[in-house]
Image (cartoon, rainbow, N blue to C red; front, side, top):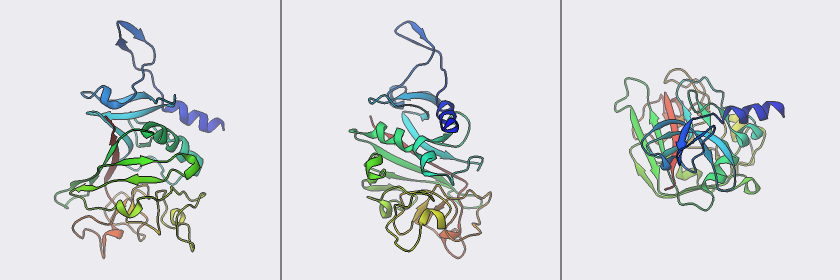
Amino acid sequence: MHLLLLLGVIFVFTIGRTQGGDKCEVCYLKDCCEDPISSGGRNIKTSEGKIFGAYCEQGWTYIFRRFNGVEDFYRTWVEYQHGFGDPRWREYFIGLDNLASFVKGRKCKVRIDLEAWPPVSPAKRFAEYSVFSIADKTDKYRLAIGEYSGTAGDAMSHHNRQQFSTYDEDNDIDSRRNCASVYKGAWWYKGCHNSNLFGWYYKGPDCPKYAQCVAWYRWPTVIGSPDNFYYSFKKASMKIHCC
C-alpha cells in the first residue's frame, strides 16, 4: 500500500504559475487544452477531484508514452488502476481510475502515434478515432472508440467494447487463456489482439516472441518477418483531446 501511495505522489509535481495575480504552490488544469501552447508535465484535476500528472502537448493530454523501455508495462491490475512512471521525463501510464474520471461525461477523440525503426519509411504514422471513452472500474474500464482515420491502419476497432485485462485480472473473451499473460502486456484484449501497445519493449524491430512486443498488426505494409506480429515499435503513444 505504501508503494502505491508513492507511485501516486510521483504523479503530482509543483509548478509555480500566476493565476489571477496570485502565486500558487501547486496549480491544476482541468484539461491540457486550457494551456494549448506549452508542452510538458502538468497537474490535472478532474471534475470529480481526481488529481494526477500528465504530459501535455498543444492541447492534447497523453494517456501513455513509450520510447525507450525504461518503464516496465507488464504490471498488476492495481498498478494499472493507479498509474505509474513519470510524465515529465520518463515513460508512463496515466492510470485507469484517472482516465475514467477524466473522460466521464465528455466528448473526446483519441490519437495513437507510432514510430518504426530504420529503415522503415515513413517511420511515423498515426491512427485517430473520433470517439474515445472508458467505463469505470465497475465495468472493468470497458473501451468505447469511434470511427478510424489516419495512416497507421486500424488496429483498435478489434478492441472496441472490450474490458481491460492484466496478467492477474483476466477480462478478455478468450475462455482458453489469459491474453495479457500470454502476450506479456495489458490491454483491452478481445481474443486476443491486433494491437498490444503495453507489450514487451524490445530494443530493436525484431520481436523474438510472436505478438508479445509493442505490436500494431494493421500497419499498412509488412515490416515484420514473417508478419507484423513479429515487429516491435520504437515509439508509441496515445493522447486524447476533449475540448
